[in-house]
Image 1 (cartoon, rainbow, N blue to C red):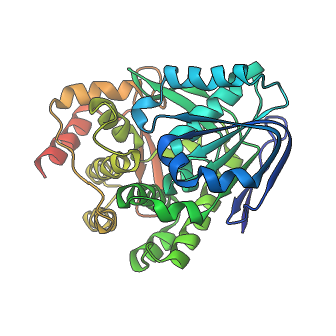
Image 2 (image 1 turned 90 degrees about the vertical axis):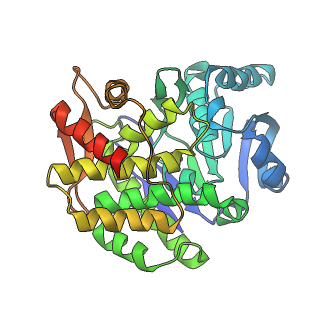
Image 3 (image 1 turned 180 degrees about the horizontal axis):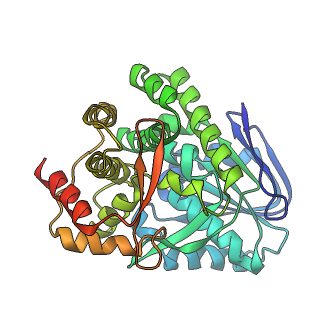
Length: 349
């Protein structure tokens, strides 16, 4: 099963997302696999025989969002230099979204850019983070504020790697699937309401459908000048939550689930979403035991943090809000008091 990513030929090359089709990757160059302690213990032994290369090296980083920083980026670049990689060499990101984002960013800046391949091992990375070429690291000011757009050479999504996912990690990926259904496909959302993603056949369909949605959006808007920003539904709120909790309390998908509920509350205040639709979305999130509530200590401080979001410009906040299930609104210039009222309601509910 495959999904093709077709991009503007003047900007980037096209590539393919392969679903359950990884057998052997042949690369007559030096290759560096970048992974983490968790994934390497579980799957590195089974991956290595699938990679045929002139030289094959491995870098194992600590596991966790708190390591998505300059220090880890430097470790990747140091490994590239130590193993004498050159401009024809290839990096392989073998892990979740953190590994994929950092490895892609390192590939984009090592010797002004080399190729990399994504082999995502989490559901979240398979349906979202590995597709579309967003790369980067976090810093004290926020999430993914330093990075680049750098498309992979190919993406290999293998259901085999999902079998060892903890339930929280699995649910975090489901949040991103729900996110895409809410804003782009009401039929897919209705399908999700009636099908259990713990069933392997249903999960395979959901992964393919989610990647197809994202592929279509990225093909239209590679560098997020318009419609691609809609994929950040729930993220404007989630990034504040992650920063305030220092990336240690919630998995990214868990923060996105809470952020979606917050965005839905604001959408309901603006009469874009009905009470019943809010309930349907929250019920589907809670079906997979995702958190849907976060207590804000200081509502004004939370609001101020929105201005560090990448979608904000000219001191104005841009919110991605659902407009009925299956639609969206890119909302700009919402009065501060209306946003604060929605945040206060989230606190009180």
